[in-house]
Image 1 (cartoon, helix red, strand yellow):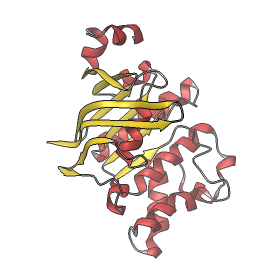
Image 2 (image 1 turned 60 degrees about the vertical axis):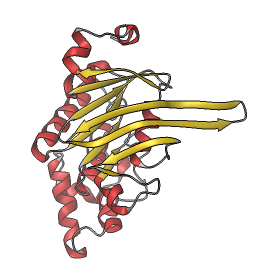
Image 3 (image 1 turned 180 degrees about the horizontal axis):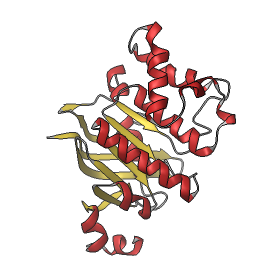
Image 4 (image 1 turned 180 degrees about the vertical axis):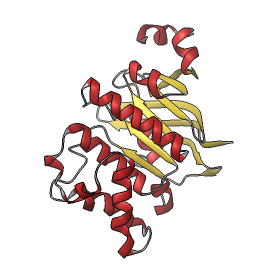
Length: 244
C-alpha cells in the first residue's frame, strides 16, 4: 500500500496576466520506505508539488492521500509532524537569533513531543543521529559550515519522528565532497529509520545516488515515471532523454 497518493492534482495561480498552470493533473504514489525523486528544470512544477504535499499550498483540484486518508487543505498538527521538510538553503532556514538546539527543539514544543524535561535529550539524540556532537546545540547557525547546517536541518526534521521527509534541493548549496557525505547520511537514515523521501532536485547525478524511482516534470506535467535504472538506461520521453 502506498503511504502517499497524489491523485489528479492540479494547481493554478491567477495573475494579472492570466492563469498560470503550475501543476496539471498529476498522479503519483510513493510507497513506505521508498525514495521518489521529482526532477525537472526550473519552473517545471516540482517545488509547487512539494508545497502541496506539505500543505503550504492548497491544490486547485485533485486529492492528496496520506496513509489512505485524504489530507485536508488546512493540515492538522499530526499531519505537519508526520510530513517534514528539509529546505534548500541551510542558513536561511535557521533563525540566526536561536541556538541550533532551540531551532531543533521548536518542533518538539510545537507538537508536544515527549515531556518538557526530556526534550533536550531528544535534541541531542537528533544531532548525534546526523553525526554532530550533542554540545553543538548551544552554538549559533552562523558558526557552522554549510554541511553542518544542512545536517542540522535534517536533525530538525528527524526530531519530530516523521514518516515522510520532503527534501527540496537539499544539497544544491553544498560543494561536491560535502554533498556526497550528506547523501550518504540520508541513505543511512532512510534505511535505519524506515523513512520515506520525496526528493526534489534538478541534479540527475544526485538522483542516481538516492532514488528508487524518478518522476520527470516538464511545464507542470508529469511526462515520465519509472525506476531509477529504467529512467537512466531506457528513457521513453524525448524530454527525459534531453535531461539525461
